[in-house]
Length: 241
Image 1 (tube, rainbow, N blue to C red):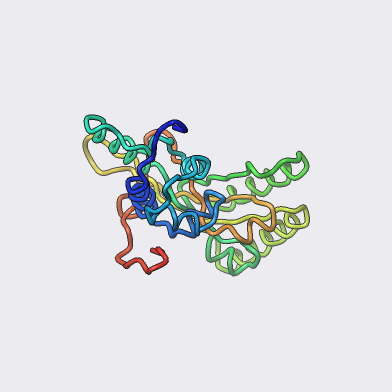
Image 2: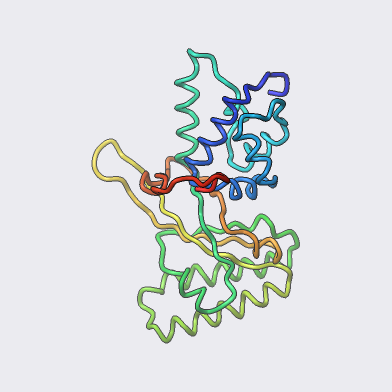
């Protein structure tokens, strides 16, 4: 990739198309890739005559795609290349998350789901990891019993959860919650659709800033087409969707 000559106009089209398909603003994509929104603006303008490969590598790594997405394929390979990218995009869920600090925020975000999925990769030390595991177990048990729980009991459970989250925060980490839908399609009949609760454990400062998390779906699961469709909104001059 480093030795290939990049077409600035094609690169601009690819970055812009990728961002729109994932329903991201320029700021969203920049945050995920750990770069500035101005860098994304420059790439999408088509005026970046010598695009930095490391910048493209950061975007590709953040979105779980190959660097070849940014290289113009030969005409005979273009259809296969585009189909491969489309398959990859169908397996990416962009999950809005809320940094949970109050019982009200917990009640707004938490519900019974078909599955719960957690990301604890930011936890490094064993003691904190042990505490995080206890929180994950608590949330899993709570999700199972949630439909049969009265409103007063839900509030009590929310307060108990906030106590756990505050204890976690004193250890330098926080919990953010969100959810997404995924489907498995079959040759015949309707697809199997699951609602998945998502929790991510991050350092306190990072949790305050994190609003969107990319989740890679496993096996033959993919996002719903309705969740992949762009909202009916025009972009403003700064590229926001």
